[in-house]
Length: 419
Image 1 (cartoon, one colour):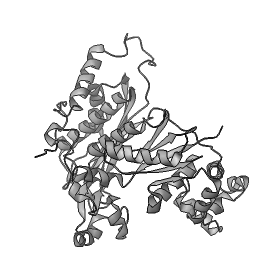
Image 2: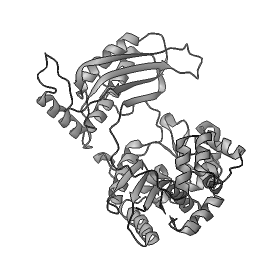
Image 3: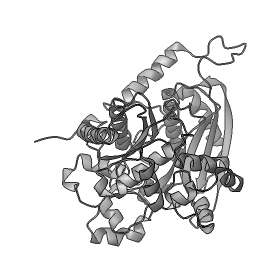
């Protein structure tokens, strides 16, 4: 059976989110910074045209950004996550099968659809009308070709933001002008080796014997070659498996030396990680806590971690906190300037698959489950927050976010006002 896939990718997503509620920023250069305002993680097209690279440290390009009047934003992942959810919800109306690939892109199954280019334009128009985020659409018989189609839709304005590679002749034409490093699944290391062998374009790669490429590289590269030749080897994954672990950690805007402050940090991370655990409908059995100083300073180095097992699998914040605080106490050392801490939850299981012991007749206390559900409901409502005594209640207090935008869509007090 022949396949038809579409890849819908938001254009400069973080920057587009920042422009949503600031229409005066249209056509104005915009960058978004990483945690602690360290590096550039998103650039508007205007900034890309200036030659400013992705991941460039802010201090290295600050003068140039100022000279071009570039608008600078700290990362606002709450805003980006909410806008992403709205985009994905809109896309679900266009296909019975949608795979959310990342925060700003999704694969759609368009097998059996007709007038594909026109349909792609309808997707673009609808997403922009409903959410306000511009997208490009690539359409092809394989997911790897779909990635290339989307690449072309972004790179060449004459395409109108939609490229359909259903025609083999059009596929070959695009492959011939696409550098091999732009092929999905070809990493930096492999692209250097391929170029050294004279394989410089996507077409060069597609024309290599698949068995030969497998012997020199891997079965993954063989699959890529087959996909470039129109053979669908990667199916749509619209029901990804549950996470195997949850990590919550941050580097601090300022070094921490106080025991109480760092302990509160660990508790905050534990609460956030456990909330994610509940949203996945899973229970954790293992907790790991780590703390460390900076590897890029002259401070005395110290790094340590500890792992503990819960008495029984749980998604109750109080249970996780009890273990996390004991682990923290076991690795804490005074007289250090800590730069990062974090917590890892692992060894997951579903509430229906718990091995009970002699002393626990029930896996979970219904009253505690109801309490956790109420806590999550209040904390996600945008109307207020509830936290445990050991947490530090100020959101993102540990990060340097000097230029963060308001939480326009998730907090009542940040709603835009039209006058």
